[in-house]
Image 1 (spheres, rainbow, N blue to C red):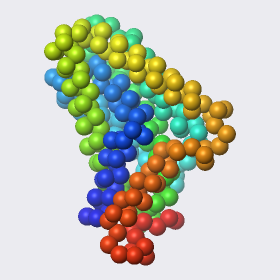
Image 2 (image 1 turned 90 degrees about the vertical axis):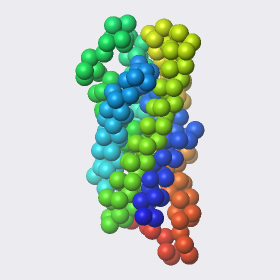
Image 3 (image 1 turned 30 degrees about the horizontal axis):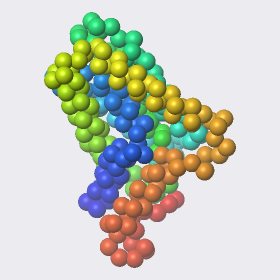
Image 4 (image 1 turned 180 degrees about the horizontal axis):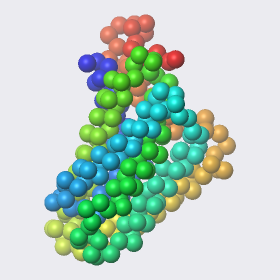
Length: 233
């Protein structure tokens, strides 16, 4: 259970930290059109994101896929920009009575593929070939648990503004989406590949994940360094 707990903790910490503000903004942008009463739809939405997340994480963790870190870091805020723009284009009827299979579900699944790339390389460097299934399972369960906490937070904020403060639902979604849009555009500008001299001098999601893993490894390691469960290939 030690290894499972470590990677579960890594998964939750990857979302529940200020360094993961881009992931938090994306999950928030996905959920802005929903209220607490729509919690079942939100669970499906977040699960779609996790599925996409898991696919690319598995591919990078096994070495089957490798993409430029600079482009991955740039594409993440682009996913937030597109999601926020989609929210701004929604009409009252679409917000109050969404279709059974709205476009936002496909956004969650497809953009989850991009977010999964953000830390896969760092995770791969800390797993041996014999240590793939348990770390991937635990990590993704941790991601899912943390995302549900973030979703709950955004739904509570929406409840306060829409139900308690009587802000029109459409206007709440548009104002919040506009804030997210401006923030993510600034983030995308800062991460333009042309503005990054090298990917090595940035504290990217890869290095963030590596640092978290090593921190958890030290916490759970009972004796000397020779007993560490984590060995780079």
